[in-house]
Image (cartoon, rainbow, N blue to C red; front, side, top):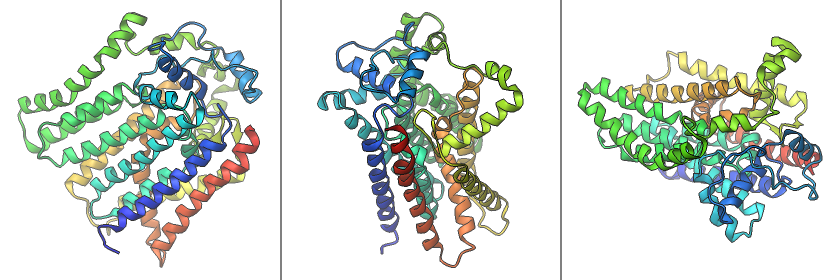
Length: 434
């Protein structure tokens, strides 16, 4: 097989396997049994049916009614029309979804399949982002893409109606662009500005890409000994398009919600009364109970805790996943401190620092959100899947070096992850939520 063509063929197999699994989740997961799916659906419906951009209002969130819906598994006699607490979200995903809604007559499945398509694009972009860091090691990029593809919780979330997958795709695209930008040679990074604009118009959790772009410009300024004028020009090429394209959205929010609520988040926090607050949980369970829940829920729901966090896998599966996670971490640390491995280049080191910063900022956003609401859901860490997948791939590659047939080990591992994702769907998701 042609050495240049082989990685692309293998990537095509990974993407095809993901699309098959994602489609199974989209078809067989009962309606509305992906977190927040009814609220995202209603946003799309409001746009398509001529209501314009919705605004977050008192009454959009009813904790008691939502608990009734989830407890009774969304029976058809209980309407979801009043579940509209995502109305503060930026509009890009919903604008992309409106023609799908219109062509499909409001059917849920076509909208879910849009998310699956975005998930497939995410895998390709994640592969290219990692390969830009390790151009001579396509196996690392393939392993990162496969790791992202076959996390059961990620497959479940990318098969629902939400803006999460588009957000992850934009983050991955921005990281790819910034890794290439760090190589130098391109002094008009307007394409980064377009990606930043897309991020600002998609989801607040991914606004971390803005400081990442500033960091990349600062790194090049320092490394190349450029002038302050050059640095200001780089930031202008990145930030001016982003601000100009997103300004109408923020101005609209200011007029709708009042200053300084330019994102609508302050209105959201006022409307969603009834959500458990961290200090309320601490008062009930103490700090020990809080931290135990924080770690347990975050870990479980990163790998697989389905529905509205109500479908929990058996404890022995989570123990196995914990062991797998520790092996990945150990392998990565081994690679990081292994003096016998080939030395990374300056560009690779700076790119890895950029990926690390992306992971840290995403986790910081997750931690900040949990100071307001009790939301220990691992899916909020998925915007950092490119750095997480890169670390996992490096760790797996280091460990696979101990085996006599590395390629077979890769195939067995990721084949097993793919089958596990399908097993979770038909063994736990469908029986528990139907």
